[in-house]
Length: 104
Image (tube, rainbow, N blue to C red):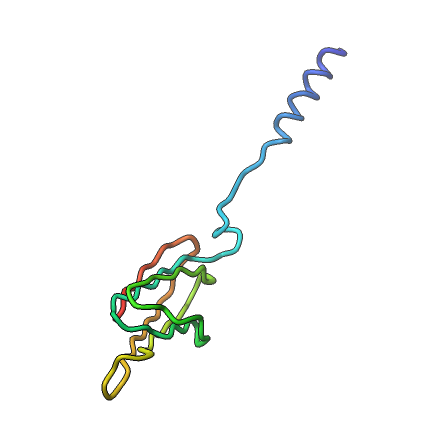
C-alpha cells in the first residue's frame, strides 16, 4: 500500500508540474507591423492617430500593436515642392500576425 501511495504521489507531481509556454504576442494580444520608408526623404509616422516618430530615409521601424483594427499614416516631412506626400493605411489583424508596409 505504501508503494502504491508513493507511486500515485509521484505521478500527480509530474502531471501537476506540466507548464505550457505561450508567445508574448498571444499573452499581450498584439500583432507586429513593420514600416519601411523607401523614399530618400523622411516621413512622420502616425499609428492610431498618434505621432510615433520620424522615419528617416531608407529606414524601417517595427511596432507591436493591439490586435484588431489599426490605422497608420505616413506624411512626408521634407523634400517636396508644393505638397507633402501622404499615405494612409488601415486594416484588422489577429494577434501574432506580421504585417509589412512600404511607403511611399
